[in-house]
Length: 96
Image (cartoon, rainbow, N blue to C red):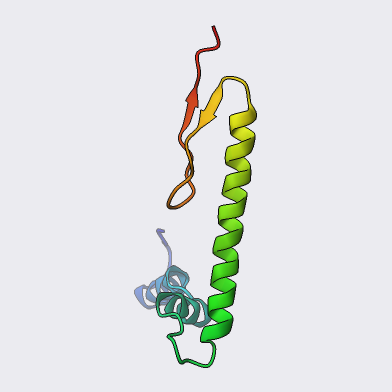
C-alpha cells in the first residue's frame, strides 16, 4: 500500500491501522490455541471432545468408502482404497 499527500505521522497511523488486519483477532487466536492443544484424558471436556472427534473421523471414513465404491462402479475408472487423509488415486482403465 502506498499513501501520498499525508504527513509522516498520519501515514504511520494509517499503516498501523492497516497492519491490524494482518493478525488474527482474539477469538481466532483462542481457537487456534484450542485446536493445537486439545483436552487431555481427565480434563472435564475430554469425553465430549473424544466423542465428537471419533464421530467426525468415522463419518469421513464412511464417506470416503462411499466415494470409492461409486468411482469403482464407473466404467473405465478404478480407485485405490483411500488411506490417510482421504485422497484418492484414480486410474483410467483402457476402454479398448
